[in-house]
Length: 189
Image 1 (tube, rainbow, N blue to C red):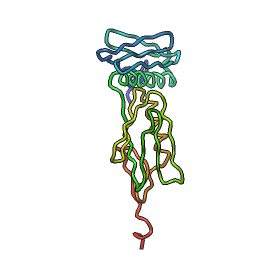
Image 2: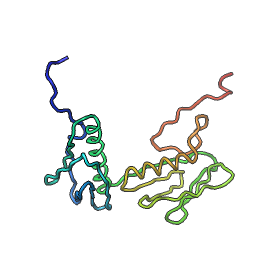
Image 3: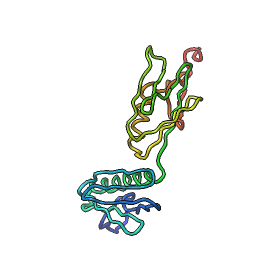
Image 4: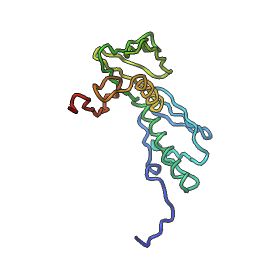
């Protein structure tokens, strides 16, 4: 190994600057961060060990203590802030596919989805505030919103209603998900 001693370790992700796009504003109020943009506004409470420094159109995230926990909070806080900036400027979307004979989804009002997934009853799913949906005829459900964390959680809950099975691939899956298929009993003979 090398003989050069490292005096201060930093998180590789945490030390990268965040560039604020045109029209995005970032304000720090104590340990709370507010990001405003053309798509909306997001607020997040950060750890007291994190300091945010704003220089023109760039934001730097700094940490007071450079121990193991400090480095992990450094990278996490920077990633969360970057996701907030991207969310209020571009937004996020996630597409789910509903596969199976008789499996379908319908929009019921603005805040509800009605799923028919092969159970003895339909499932009424309530959407949280800030998540918009678009249902297409070919069995695709597009979710969109500005909060990446909330969008991923809602997509995960919808997928868990009827996860994809490995034999025929029926169920709800992410559009970019690959389902590994199993052969079944007939192929074993």
